[in-house]
Length: 74
Image (cartoon, rainbow, N blue to C red; front, top):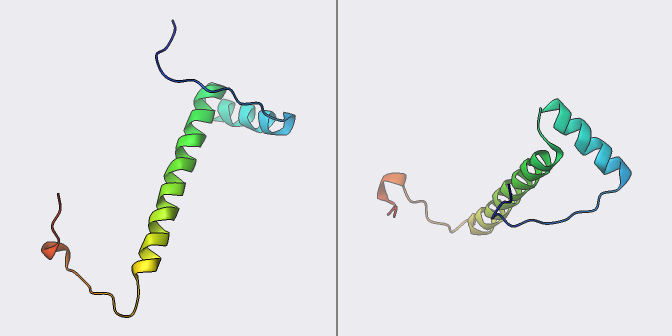
């Protein structure tokens, strides 16, 4: 059955394909599901890294500490 989700096409070298195949078998997933999981994990890692960089930029000697209870959460 066709899907309405966007699709991409990726060409892998033989070594990467072999690793993906082995990982998919180990996790009992299809290769496409394994690739999707790996890409999602990489995106979450990248988001965490970027937020860490923002936090490091803001962590200065003159930074003002705000208690969690004083913060406005929306």
